Image (tube, rainbow, N blue to C red; front, side, top):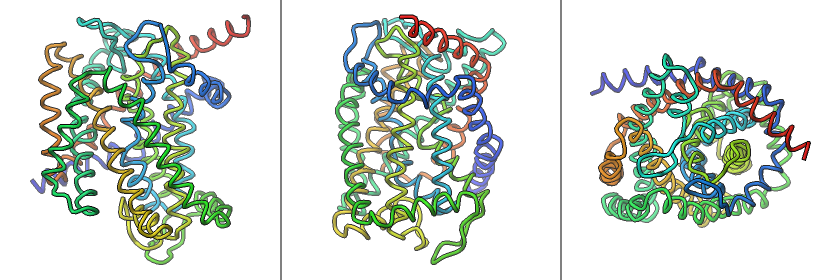
Length: 448
């Protein structure tokens, strides 16, 4: 088992190494250029579309607003708390700058994924709308590329049990055991029952819960973070200056921080940024394909807000608190660093902001990723697999909550990275189609 773990570590190092990270960032730059920076120019318009998208009478299964909330439920997770802390621990404060850069170009990636998902979506035997990378590869590319669709669906189906289920359940159980001394087995059972009540109801119930829970949880976490930042508001300019300075000059050793070169800031900033907002992995477009819309462009604009909200807003909140508190120099990492940072500024309260943030974020990730994995499984095996998949998904939750997940985490990390490769190839090949659809849409808008 130790040899297998070492092998997975090595494979993960290659998959999430400079080549893939450069490809992820490079595709984002290419798509941003092809779109003439449309995602940056129309961010405010996208928020207006999101507000209008709370209701829709178009064809689809869930409203455009619910589609984004479902995608965010899967996207906003441990990466926003533990992932940001890890990036700063390994790459210094400068890693935050590279997370921002990844997110800005990732907006174009997420936009293109959603445009293609809606443009090439299908209805299955039940009359439900299905889409995502496997469908836009199958319907948008020639047959010689169809093996990429199968590869993506396989990687997504298996990876979801790790990154979207067992790892999240373990995070919740560990956090509650440490803070409230709740047994992990009890937490696993309660999580299973709560998730079952939502997941067995399918995408309509997942979207309904996500639309109610995500705005509340994200708003509460942002509000709590702003309180901490507000208490140290005079230090914010210096913290932002530190982020920009260390992004290009590296970070010297200080306190328990060992120091980090510029290359480390770039590597871990990009890696954690992608891990957090999932732009390029191909997961979010699966949710957006179910939206009630007849405009791929409008849904794409709503989708790109997911990257903005996840990284530019929520990850920045976590990063600023960690830097302002000075906790990043103490030698801690992951959720422990975030807890120390919030608790150091707001003793007795800050720790709960992190704990409840982790619990709610991880729970909604379990809901969102259950839908992603289910659609991947349906693509491979048809609608008959849906109920067995949901049952297996629920069984995995208590197993994840109580288990030692080193191997599961590594395997999920590898498969999660492998999901990105077929999707990025498809985005490169289908990019010109997205550019044409987008330019035609805005040309028509100008004429009206």
